[in-house]
Image 1: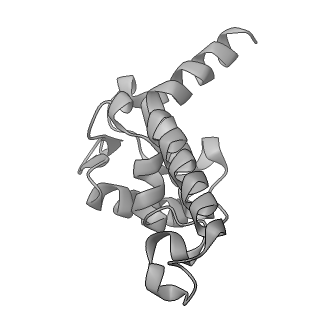
Image 2: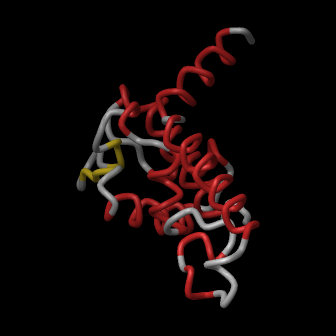
Image 3: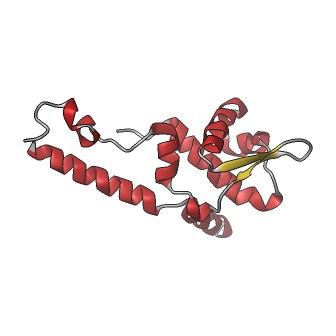
Length: 141
């Protein structure tokens, strides 16, 4: 399993909005410049995050994007799910019928345990956690 570019860049977008949210709505052009991600691609990511209820938009002069919920309420699992669906290290973890051996497979239990551990770690890490690390790192420079 790989974390997709959409999930990675979507997380960076959310973190950027959290870092600059006290300035009001953040234009994607500013995020694009700071994060070195194309504005067109950010627009696609922001649309998916808006559909998932994580970001909101303000239109007109001074418009842009902002977090729709506090950063402590957005987990990495939420972001991953918005772009990649449920965590699934191997097909049989979620769909036992994908393999004829799944009911008797000893290794399937190992994959299921690893899957649960990854989900738990992603669920406990929030944008607020990343925000705290980012602020700590910038104060040391």
